[in-house]
Length: 166
Image (tube, rainbow, N blue to C red; front, side):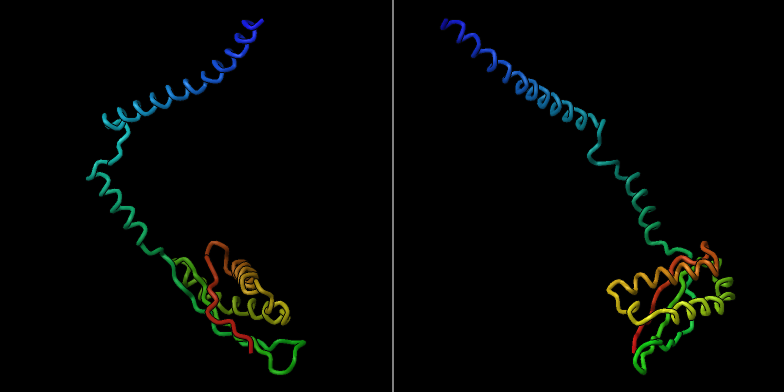
């Protein structure tokens, strides 16, 4: 009976060593293969200097190239807030970021833009302006309204220059 007990205990030890041996062999094979791939320049660690420099110079030029945009200033708007104590006013000034080709079209439609923004800002209450994320929400709402008036493809962004509650 002692022989049967020793045979059973030897099998789990051999089975546990097999995955470790396979893992070590594969790791050594991968290391050797990687070494030869780099040594024979199949997988270059250092790219060829001349071609790489030209690509890098082109990508740097593209990154530093200014886009074809223009900024159209909107006349300052002064709004008296309703439903509040005396003397509450909102002073608002912004600029529109537009494609350079569309600058004249947007400038032509500027009175409509001012009208839309004026109407929207007059409809706001003081609570709408004092919320923590108010400026971000209002900016998105105003941008959407301006894009409806001028055209979505003409206006990229609305930049708020001044937003002061007195």
